[in-house]
Length: 200
Image 1: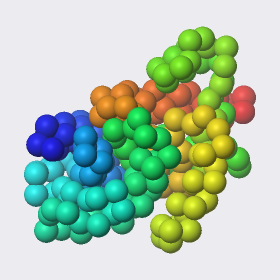
Image 2: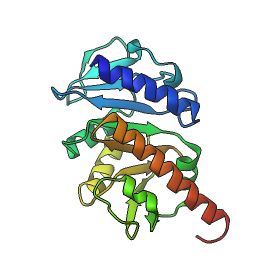
Image 3: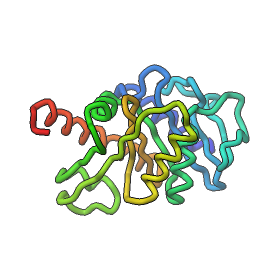
């Protein structure tokens, strides 16, 4: 667990410096070998995390270790872990690009014919596309989780957006999840510039 926490502390610092985790926004988690999940505590500043800012949960979301309250969006992390047994980390950021594209898109975001799509496992050519579902933001995590689950279980997805909120993505390691964040943010920025240029 200490290794995963150390990695998430470093990731939090880097993402904060990039402006993707402003104030107390976002949340970071990792699944351990025994199925428990370590996640950032509610209200924690991701640029200044310490080991005390993490909570250890069982697969059902019950607190196993830690004195703080887990992130309010814990249910979304646990949902991803339930749907994708291979996933070891879920990262959620409030980057400007992710937030803006979620507001400007009237439907799911379609990323097509970009070379960087090969950053996502299973993609070997730029001649393809990735759909990123956009869900309306909600404070009702149970209801939102059901909506997200209904969508994700019926396709191949690498992340999803909450409108006016940010991006969730995941990976088979903390490093892979971080790489996906970078890929998504670059691709979102490209799409936003095309929108502003009147191409989209």
